[in-house]
Length: 228
Image 1: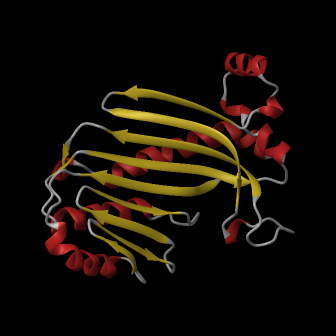
Image 2: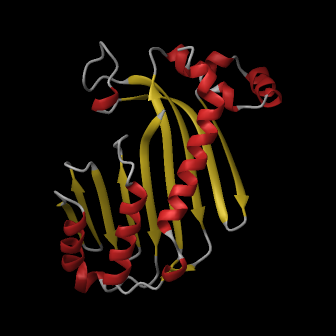
């Protein structure tokens, strides 16, 4: 099981210095992300990417985001925290309206049946019984839950998806660009209460969510993964 997506975004109400400092901000980001180039420039947003680092990002007058589809990007939490720091300092942002980390774990499977079988270990037996009373296990492609946890909104999703694997995950016999069934486990955690930038440890927040999500998934799936 590896990260298929890691994405961190945050919003702010006082980003009007974007119009004066977007070029300087882009240059500063190039210093911390090798190979970063401008992809698109809109009136209120700049979009950049680094094929070398497999990083995409954008920043604008109200929101910024950095994300990677690389399964090997273990330093994403540090990179995201640096991104937040540079954006906040350059645009003199003191408070975030909200912040959000999205983490998708998954793996390509040999067949649709294998992917569907790996959906169910995460569900309690009582829940599985209720879901299977609605439709047969082989007919399910996704299930989702949402709840509030203090100042956080949490959304989880288990889904079988047809995706093009990252080059490092391409199964034997598969062709580049071919869509393959994947089992995926999504976790979105959003802090919806404004917070001062100086009081927010973005790296710790991302690491905490990522580690707990990974441990939970692997602890329940490990016996089943050993059989496939």
